[in-house]
Image 1 (tube, rainbow, N blue to C red):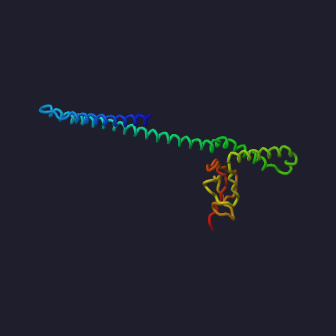
Image 2 (image 1 turned 180 degrees about the vertical axis):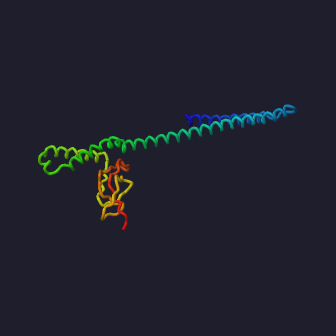
Length: 208
């Protein structure tokens, strides 16, 4: 729309210039008059030129205004396209984060249940235990399918506040301050975002 209006203004300017050129050519062919007529003829073109310049300047100002509006609309459309593309990518990558957080307690409970089973209980409830193990493996497979990556620190690793959460601190012989001394729960990343930090206990043993 703005391009069409801009072109119309350019055409109008060209038409005004063409009309002025035809008018001057016609006046030149008619020749010069005498007396007051000469004076009037001398004044009239000057007035005509002023009107012509005023019309051209008005049309050029309108053209510049339309061009500015067009460029602003073009920039707004490009920004909207970029925002839409960014939102689409984030929805694809992180849309499952809420569901993932809701499933983490299920993962924790299944893991704790298996860790609490001793050999006697496993032998007495073999079928039940195997069912829980299969369910946990399927849940882990679903996590992997949706790019959930487990954070699995080990005892002796250094505490990293970016991906670990200290549940407690305690002095423990043979360790340094900042060493992980217990892992309470694994953490999870979703792509480059932290879904949940790994929950750990940290040594507070002072340096010797």
